[in-house]
Amino acid sequence: MAQVSTVTSQAGAVIGHDVAMRFLFVGDSMTVGKTGDFTWRYRMWQHLEATLGDGGYAITGPRTELYDTEANAALSHVYGDAAFPASARRHLAGWGEGWLHMAPVIAETVAETRADVLLVSLGLIDLGFYTDSTQTAANARAFITAARTANPRVKMLLLPVIPNIRAESDAPFAAECDRFNTLLAKVVADLDTPSSPVLLVSHPTGYDIHTDTYDGTHPGPTGEHRLAGAFADAMHQAWGVGGPYAGALAAA
Image (cartoon, rainbow, N blue to C red; front, side):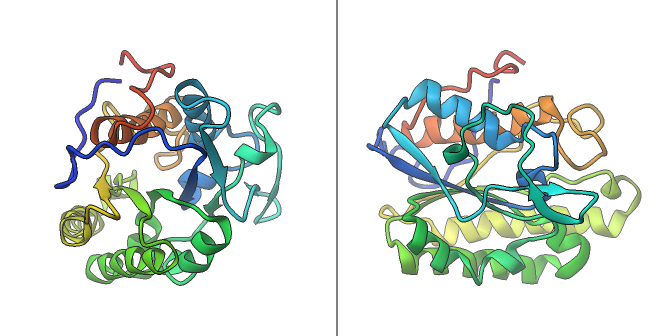
């Protein structure tokens, strides 16, 4: 998946292949997934296995469940691949959760899990139901600040909001998505530091909500690869971590 990442002033810094680098996925329904999904977390696990190898990384987090649509709760453990290791299923993601919900808990989570790389995909649910673009950006800023209280050297990759099918018919919502992404870029520019780099991930190359999602919002298999590829390529290009994404859509 050819892609150029939007990086910050730390683009030339090589972080390297840290031993047991601890990754924490933070996200909403697009990240937690539902019963039967593979999830983009699974695709990223495959990438980390291939590029960092056994002992070169760990996936951490307080949760392992998928969302069960019938129970309306995160109770499922039925992943698309039953061989997905339990230790690699860990995350901090929730159906209906956004920056609003994660900012108050990220410090304790980073402290408890000893996470040092955060892969964050949040914002759509905030803009759709909870907060406007200004407040959502303020919550993103609070999230970054809080994470650093637990680990002053934490590294963060932030994915801008991918407008979903609602944005095609709701012009004010589409405008809020665009405005938030502009504000998020400013947050990253303001808060990026050499000791705790913050990276703004590029929009996944070729991502099409009509073909890469199953409902106009949530990623299907191709969307999962594109999301994982966006994070993987950003880390490799900016920090020298891992390698280029070589998943199913690497040549797309």
